[in-house]
Length: 212
Image (tube, rainbow, N blue to C red):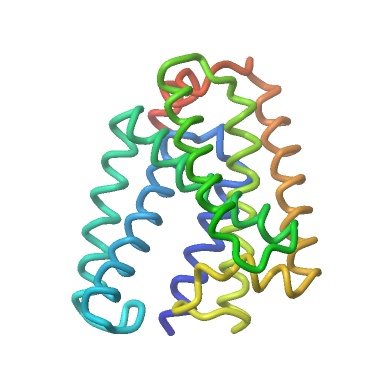
C-alpha cells in the first residue's frame, strides 16, 4: 500500500514538473521541496532505526514534518528553492545519464549531477540564468520521477530500492525510451506555454508565479 501511495505521488509531481516546471515555478518547486523532504525524512528514520522505508509511525511523522518544512522554505525563499530544486533535479538527471551510458555503479555520475545542480542553483541566484535551462532540467527530472512512480505502481520497483530506479530502467529499455520521450514532450509543452509570455530569467519566473 505504501508503494502505491508514494508511486502515485511521484507520478503526479513528476508529470507536473515535467509539463509545467517553469510556468508554475513557485508552486511546483514547493511541491518538489515537499516531495524531497518527505523522502529524506523517511530515509533518515529508516537508516537510524534500521527499519524499512516508512515502516514505522516515526518514519511517517519525520517524512511529513520535513515535507512541510522543505515546501515552506522552497515557496518563500528564492535562494533555497533554486539550490534545492537544481541539486535534487541534478541527482535525478545524473541517474538518467548513468542509465543511458550503461553504468552499473552510477555513484560518480550522481555526484557529478549533484555538483552540477548546485552550480546551476548558485548561478541562478547570482546571475539571470535563462528560464530555458529550468525548462530542460525540470522536464528531464520530472520525467525521471514520473517513470519511477510508474515502476512502483507496476511492482517493477520497491521503496527499499528506490534509488536504483534508473538502473532498473536501464535494464528495461522500453521504460528508458518512454522516459526520454516524456522529457522531450515536456520540453515542447513548456516552450509552448512560454511562448505566450516572454521568456526571462529563472528569478523572474519564480517571482511571477507567486499565485497559480
